[in-house]
Image (cartoon, rainbow, N blue to C red; front, side):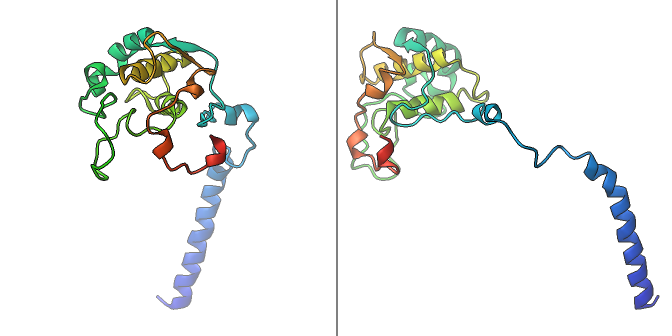
Length: 180
């Protein structure tokens, strides 16, 4: 077969392919369509260190203990003191132990609001974003009280959570200091 015959067959094959693909392209999944503010809002759930975007609701350590027992203990152990996954409650210092030092809520996290943010978006495994806002407030209150950062009877909500002074706050290098 000559080169010109091969080129002719290639062109015919390409044209046939385009004709077959045209209906499939017309039935596309709507790529490029405009999305609404409500569409974005459903995924825009970031809580900033200063508490911006914290939702309404509240929770206590007692409420959080119940949620923890139901949805968290299998991974993080009794009282958050260790399980197959991250230890949440510990007095172990971070300093002087190198990069491999176990990081906990007490020795690492700079802002209680970002603990809320992380739990809200990533927990419980394997079903993230299934906790109510009240359950997340309760879990944060429980974890903070178990770490002796807040009193056991403290109520965590959009006003009180940003006021919690985390033990490592002054040692944390903040990427966006104007947001604190």
